[in-house]
Amino acid sequence: MSKIRMNTEYRNKFYNRIKDVFEKEETQEQQAFLQARENFNTAQKYVFDLAKEVVERSYPKEDVAILRTFKKKYGDPCDVVAKDKCFYFAHKEDVNDEGEEKTTQSHFDFGLYGNLNGSEYSSEDTEHFAHAYFREELKAKGCNPDIIAQQSGKDSNPHKTKHVDMCNKALGKSTSGNYHNSDDNGIGLTKDFNAPFYADVIGTSYCRSRAIACTKDEYQQFEEWRMIKAKVVSTHQTWINSIMKQCDQLKIGLKAYRYLSEGIELASELGIKLDEAELIKTNSTGLTIYNPTNLANMIKGMKNKEQTREQKIYERMKYEKESVN
Image (cartoon, rainbow, N blue to C red; front, side, top):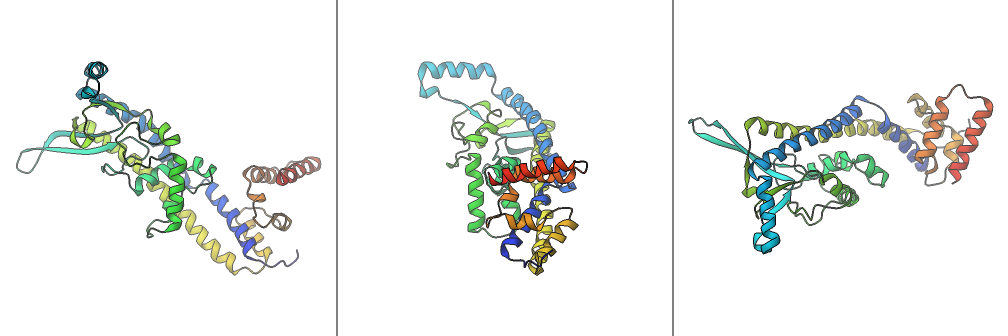
């Protein structure tokens, strides 16, 4: 193999190719994140059904129907029914140190950007959840859904803000900040996510003014659901941390390499087969090798050890044709 010198372009190609493999590896951290997301999907539906039962105890469907009839008859003065996806739930089944009954209450929001800590307002954690939940969809749109995890512990900066805003825009997050209005809860994926999780409430004020009574057991189930939602964020953070640690070492190594052959040897040791011709063939942007379809076909071809010579030639010609396109 000729001694082709490493340069910034080649280092970036190696880095992006290997990083892509790191993200697709079925590691314990990745599987924990995917499982947490599945657990949330199950809990979200079950716990919202419970929440709807609790809400309808306080605001019976018959009363809601009557009030809607009055609104139709008398107009805005009787406009007191609204759909909401966030609720203050409260129970009074405990006592304080003096033996007096005490109220335990918190805010629970079933929307995509609903809080994870009882606050009424969206925060970075809520954005982190939304980006992690729709990670694959955001990556397909050219966004970086891992940006908040990657920037964890760092001060706000233009790079982070740019990518967070791109993700929120791609998801259709509402820009008004009025998350208590059922007509202003975003568009696209955000609206689709929120749609199944509304219940009818009676009252014209925000949810903070109407604590809805529930039992202690029901309240605990709401809290457990919120912890399940938070685990999507924590497992995503752990997974991305593991990838970043590997990538940090990768950068150090690639920076020290002088020749292309050293990068190829590194990839080989990591179980990634690359060859010099493939790296040189790609243009200055290095995009050809990272095209998902081309990359998938190349990897599948590498794994098939039983191919005939004719099959290998066919697959190679097919790959080169797709690369040009």
